[in-house]
Image (cartoon, rainbow, N blue to C red; front, side, top):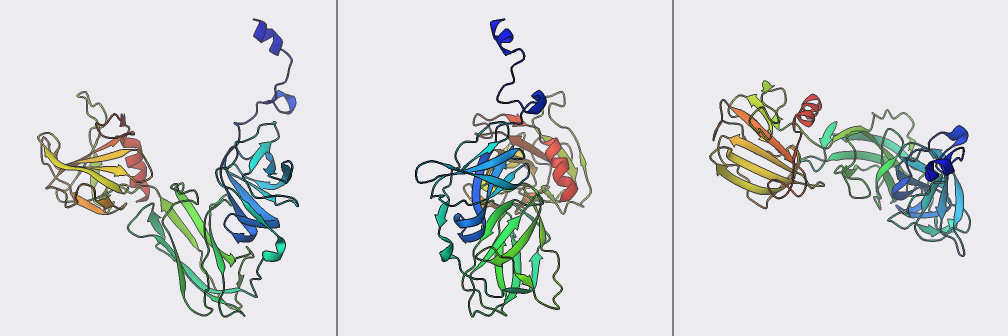
Length: 372
């Protein structure tokens, strides 16, 4: 009762104007330089940096290390996942944090930003983008084919240091490449495997490639050039029966009145099966109930995926690295199976019969089915 009484009529630090509840505390995942850069995490005074993470919409200040105390810089733009600010005079090398309008501060970033004098910037020297294209239009994290940008530039310099950003629909720079000594009027390429600059899988969705000089100044479109959309759809998983247009139907799911631990998907015997997400083969064996089965420890996740009732043993070896979308075997009815189908299971970390728990396979399977 004392605690309740003490709180009556008192606005906490986590309340905004009118007593509105504050959003969650900001969480910083990464910090990179956007413009005025001499590297991905090497910014110059007056350059723009992007801090990315969660609960960033209410962020008002970015805190930089200084010679004697930290220096607060006002943000210039925010989204739910990013906050941008200009590097202030006096900022020094080190980790940054953010502070929102409710007095909540994030922890320091894992990565350090290096601050350099403005004099170290190199000019992009009339850089122009002559032609560019992205292929394929859709790709998968850790997949067989990476998203590849092919481009041609024009420039007054015989060799050019460039910057290629992968940008989300909200404007977050999730990955940056720094091609060096790029020759004008020749085709150059950059490939992206679907990971962010923090090494984690990027969220599924649409992204666009942005080409600029190393200083972050965007390349101008060459006169008369008609550039296509440089966007790419990247997904974390693919539907395991391919092609997905093969006729299939959903059978028993979790439980099914008999302790069923997966989702059955019926299709023609011999239908091609692929890894819904790549990783490392953990098991490849035969069981009286499961028939021929394979278990994959997922890349970028502690989960395991199990695929059962294959026609015959998978050609993959235990310990082998497999890519998202890579062939793993053929759908069948081996073991205790009624009709040809894939029995698919998801297990939480540490994995399949290694202390993990059974996860819902049906909802994600139907999601992957829609876009694959």
